Image (tube, rainbow over all chains, first blue to last red; front, top):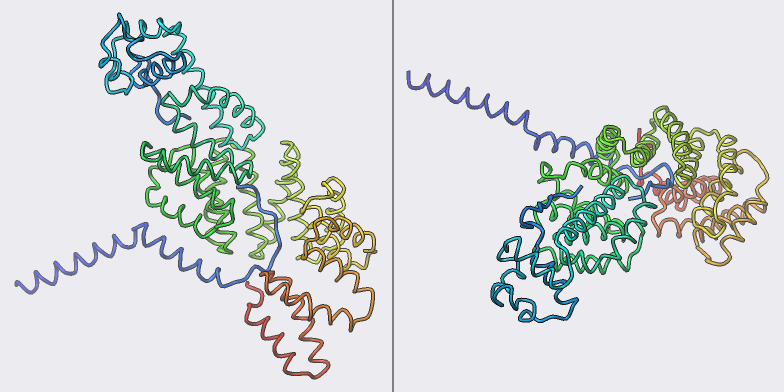
Length: 54
Length: 425
């Protein structure tokens, strides 16, 4: 009985933490950053361009 | 937008003490002379250090002794605050002409502002003003001043200081440091003063494109566009759209880029943004060249060439672009070569000199041109980080050595191309 209860508790908590991670903005940023790294390898093929003022 | 409004009730947030001190010093009075018959010296001392808020009658009496009327004083502060709001709005809406005008008005009152609670904000926006004007010397001086003042900054003022500091580093070309400062600000993203949200996204998008981080840059540029649209910030909207257009071009999203350039050409003309219009044409011509529509690119560049100041860097860049497009279409280029040489004769910039010589050599022997590629152009482009140009030259050299069956050199030049990536699609 105790084992069953423990398994349920673990399962529920894992699900809860998982859901938290999926919606966390920190994680979304990390995914975004990873996508950026691929782009960063690419050298500027186009241009030169004039950038608008800062 | 002044971040904190002052109240004129009892003059509590107006730093009435500082104002009294300002006038006392201006009239060359001692505390004893001023306090005489009105209050004690220690009382006046506390008032002047803003550690005690005096009763309105005391304030009026002290000021009246120096010929200053309290009501007029409150009005003056309100007027100055209004001028400062104008100054700030000009910076947000990129109305530089009006900002210069406001700066002149406020600088006349500089000494007085120093005695008011507006001082921090005024000094902060002056910093931004100097970066707008690309005035390195004044901006650096202002940065040092703000470093000393920053102990007295409120939370939003601290945020602004970090933000302007990041723009300052952009101005002096320290892109990494600039981006780092912006990224630190992101942690407190909820504390962005509302009017700065668009500006924050815009600066971030601009820095990211400089680092060739296109996807992320597009994400922020789109946020900036949305924000500027929402707040009717038309000039900055054009700037953000220009970032997006460059971004799309570099990512081969030509259809989207063409559409944006159409909008930019039309709207920069309607709003009288001549410089921006010229820059749009230049960037658009780059896109046309990518699409092998060189004849159209020549037409576009010819439209702006003679409208630019002959001694400007931009004029020379337009000529190089024009030469590239014209030589692809087989048009006459001598005239443009001469113009480029003439424009470069005073300031002798190596990049332009190399291009002028290169286009000239194209008329002569192939051997001569390839020697020039190898000895001058390729080392220069590689050393100075002109990746696109270096790749173009190395392609030619690789082909040449393959034909000559000099495999070692052929391998070196083709390996350079591969190392630096092919087309990224």
